[in-house]
Length: 590
Figure 1 (cartoon, rainbow, N blue to C red):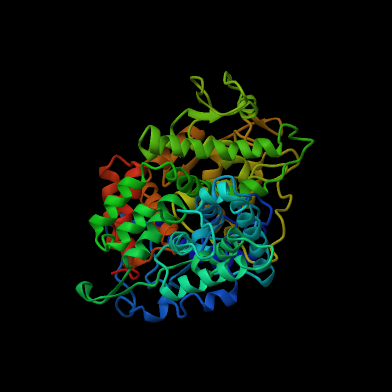
Figure 2 (cartoon, helix red, strand yellow):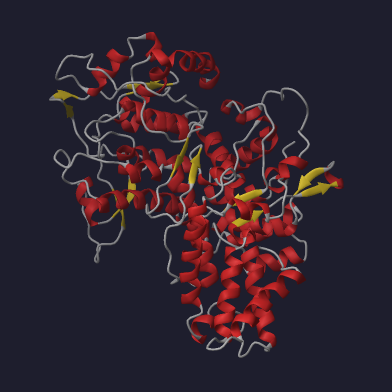
């Protein structure tokens, strides 16, 4: 397998990279961590360090019994190609709401029209915000931002009785109305993802009553402040999922039904649970795999599931690097912020259509010539556009198109290229990291830019070939560049081209000994690679659990891979099977 061949090479790469003068460039996954900037269009979810301490105290990690001592046994079965680390995972049991989860939760709790604004940014680890969310807390400045955002949101939701009626099960008419307690309990239950304790109910009802009875105030104002306090609580800003020892399962830490409701809602809806899910938790019917699967089958038919897949799709196709992509406006006048946004929407729609409309094979993404375009993207791709209103439409690219498969989408091509030049290194690194789950070490700090070692007028490929003539540089670049060469027929913005520096493009390369001559053949090589399906399952698993899989996850991942393959590689079925998997239902793996 490719990974076993690479182990020694990667060790050499890490040890010798100091001598390498080539710049690998930007980071995406593979153990790297990046932070999405404020104002980038994502709404971060985080809570203060002081809030962490009040969210239930100690972390679950302190209660975890490591599964075995010493080195874990080597992984077996399909997951073996991923080379999982042989160490027990660290877990906190506290998951800060991600950007999407925070925004979606506010919309589900306060109405789809609730005003939203950026809060402190997500941290991306291994390509996923959910992994970063288990490791970070918000800065003191971020606490103030939350206060402002939630203040504006609750002011909108409780502006008058009609607004409040859309949020609450009943609208209290006075501070002595029994409806006040009912409203606090039901709103709090959804926000906290569990029933409120009697002390919590008393606290928030007393707050609403105290403020609501002040001169010039009203019961709706009191209710607004109670909701504001609930939403600023760490019990909302964090998913608190600690688990408890299960005697029936050998003492393993198992998530409670309410914790499972929280996990199901986060995984399938990127939001808070609905009343049906919480009712199932109250009856303890989520403590079994069958109970979780029953709810998952209901939830997968709800429109909210599309938001969750969009979140996963954005991370899989590296929305962060796309959002940061800068292009030379003189060389690429067609590059605009609206084109960037359209490229991201295109890959989101392709994934959503495949999973929930076509219910097709995930691997078909690498050979499909069906995509989605708006007017600007259609012009950029050179395809006809017939929709009215400027929105997106599903199109079949013409026969013989060079833009074959998801790898030829503008989002992937533009995200992994420089301002003026393409980057076979960045493009190949993306495929390795996110689609094949192979980690390429980052270059050490202070590595200078790529020198001009090739003659003037050379193509990017010729420069990179010269660069790899150095054994110390070849150790890393030989893993990435041959994949990226297959994408060289597309410039830095993802526009098709046939020449580079007036010379014909050579888009040939190899993947695990499989030769290809263009991006369509590269897509076929990725489609047939032994890593691709296990990698997707591993990415879905990692995104849901908020941690990297390790060797102790071997059994659970192999089960999911087998179920995914048996389903015809259908993503919707993978999401359902995930929540019934022991890796999802227990804190610690076997």
